[in-house]
Length: 369
Image 1 (tube, one colour):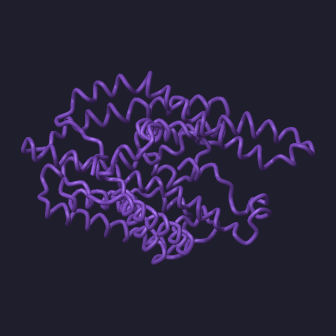
Image 2: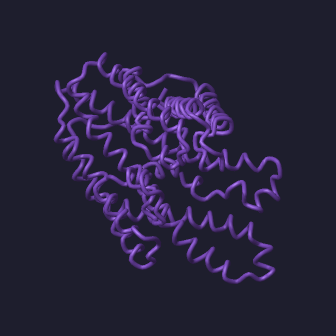
Image 3: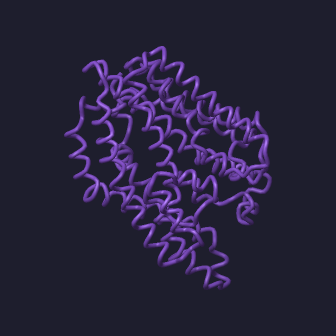
């Protein structure tokens, strides 16, 4: 997601000068990175369903109240801190009319639908529209696991996929903009269906694969995602293309869900020793990375890009490329710093409270083969 918000467009003169006819591949890469959010939805649905199924098998039921307490303690404190910071930014910059109204929609977890109706807002909190979709998934996730049989859960996932594709079919028939497809909760529910299906298929077991098989599966899933973005343009706004139509949208989002599912399966049960400690740590603070990357981009664009844009000397024009790359590195570093500080000093107390409401102990998705 970070790269999808920082990589330049294929229409950028610098990209066209360097890559010539291969410039459209940059937009394809941006599209693919943006679908990291789809991977998150698949992963989230898998983990939520897996923990609830374990809980039901251990205790005979799913404790819905405890589930919501755990989710509130994990999601809400940092989410509302980000909204408070976004409000300060909005007051200081007055970035657009209705910006405060948009943040108000975000506060009641309707940010996705606000963007779907009114368009993107130019505020660092804008990536948090996905939290709205996640919270909407939580409205029914514990209840279906509590009351549905395994067979009924398969039927529920099928229904979710049908609803998602029905929306895509209808949206593809109209001259609609990309953001009205991308931020539509019903469209994204296909990813949640995929995550639940992985949980049901595995039945609590982790895939046993050799390292070369996992690497091959990762390579295949990424290639599939790249080809999907390059040929079908499901994120047609990023690609600079028009709505590709119903069937390309339906196939594009379906293949994206499949690619994300295969990528998740490739890492499930992998030996933890294969991952460097820094990667494991970034995974631990990943929520903060997602929440703060918009603020880091806003800060560096204002203080770095804005500064150099105001001093258009021949030397600065010559160094535009290196300055842009340096800015991406600085933004990434600032994102990590903000997320690390947040995890250590702000999120940890809430995580300790969350742990006290656990019915069963959660386990890491990595293991040893």
